[in-house]
Length: 209
Image (cartoon, helix red, strand yellow):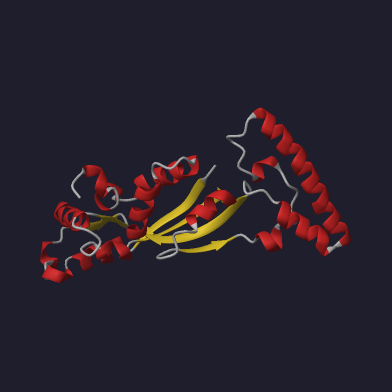
C-alpha cells in the first residue's frame, strides 16, 4: 500500500522561460498566470513537447520543474525507491527514535495483499512485538530496543517528504510502471496526474522517441 499527499509542483513558469533561452524566443511565449496558477500556452506546449521528445540533452528545462510530495509506503518499497539517488532528496520519520512511541497496530503495516491465514499469523507476531515495546518502555533495556529494530517487518510503513524533478520522474516512471509491486502502479498513477505530465513526462507513450 502506498499513499501520496501534499503534492506541490514548483517553478514551471521559470522552467518554460528557460526553455526559450537557447534561441532567444521569449517573445513567442504564450503562457500566462490565471488566478495565481501558471497556465501553459499552446506555443509553449508545442516547444516543450518537441524538446522533451528530443532527449535528455534537449529537455534540460524539466530538471528545473520541482516536485515535493509526502509518501507513506512500506519499507520494502522504499528499498527500491532508494536506488534513485540523483536528483532526489527525502526526509523521513525516524524508526530509530520513534519506533517505541506508539502501540503497534495492523494499520501501521502494508497488509492489503496478505491472505487471511498470513494476516492471522501476522497479528500474532504484532502482539509479540507490542509486548516487547511495552517491556522496553518499562525497563529501558537496550536489548529490547534492538529486538524492536531487528524484528520490525519490511511491511512497516514509513512517511517521507520527497523532492524530485520532472526529469527524474521520467526515469522512474518508465523503469517502474510495469513492476509487479502494486505500490509502483500507485506511484505511476500519481505521476500521470501531475501538471502537464502528458506533455513533459509521458513522452514515450506517444511512440515518437
